[in-house]
Image (cartoon, rainbow, N blue to C red; front, top):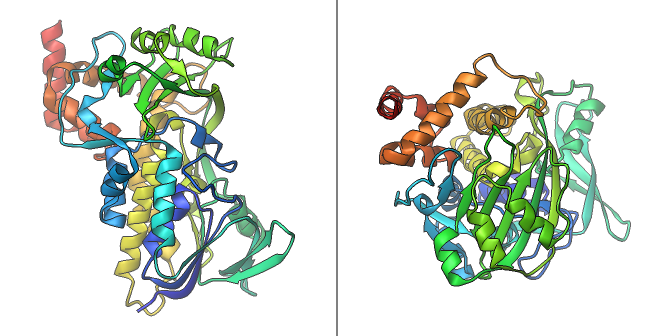
Length: 447
């Protein structure tokens, strides 16, 4: 039994493709509309500039992908993704040695974002009833005569031809979400409340080749910033093509790198010398790429009454956080699992689309609360960040530092910390009575 005849998804990036997979079997026809044309191979495309930069498929994201596709880890391996244990991440936190390398039985796949998207797209487009229409710009969502629902989309092809696609369900996975906002305005509804954290974060990435001994010793690597002396972060990740992604993230820098020597020089200003040592022996295999992320934003669509039937905002349209925490892809995958489960639970409803968006926004609330907290709290630690700071921010940051110190000597704390960072467990688990006691014990022993 199908939920509806046709669903339209705007955007064929990570979020849109994941949403499409969640709809498979629920609709007779699933149409995905994308502005870009797709490359034949796994390559970055114009509509996804962040695809040129290092990305992480967190363990929680892999779990969600396997829930959606059944065997996604196999597809990644077959495509060349490099895999290690999440506990093998060389995690450097200021004021202490790198956390010991441990095994937590959490696979960590390293590959580029275009590769992940390419593998997902090939799998989704092979599904029965799925059609991907590339080279089209969606102009607007079509409202029912009384304005209470969305009944389709209007788009234009590259040669200027207009198209109309009727739909029982429209998912806005376009990223910016202007189509949803325009529809709300056009039908007399209020704009959503927004939570924002202004960061003006600069990301720099370059693909490099490095001797094998450096790969063994320092990949994967994450060097966290020393909040007392700046905000510089460094990262090294393997790729599916046997090269390495070198990544630097900064804010408030007077001089930003635009070439390889400048990139290496900036790496030398990190809180440790690990990444700089690798780069001094590495060879760039491309130019330095720059990406500016002005602010994290969460739109509280769940607060809007009389939400239009048949319209679902999805992925970055709802919540987009600082990409340095690598949460974007995983959040979209988890949202897709929630959507799939909701549709399954409504399969025999007489009107399964009624209230679906509200149910999704409600069910995804805890996920988004957690992601927002994990991003906003460390960002607000930096003086130049724009946003509302709670009275207990200093206390939260102090406890976070204590957890990191405890993780060095307590394997259980280390594993839970990584499960939280990997979006396997919520951050609230770090505040359980058992973990708090263990963190305090380590702190007491250090005095």
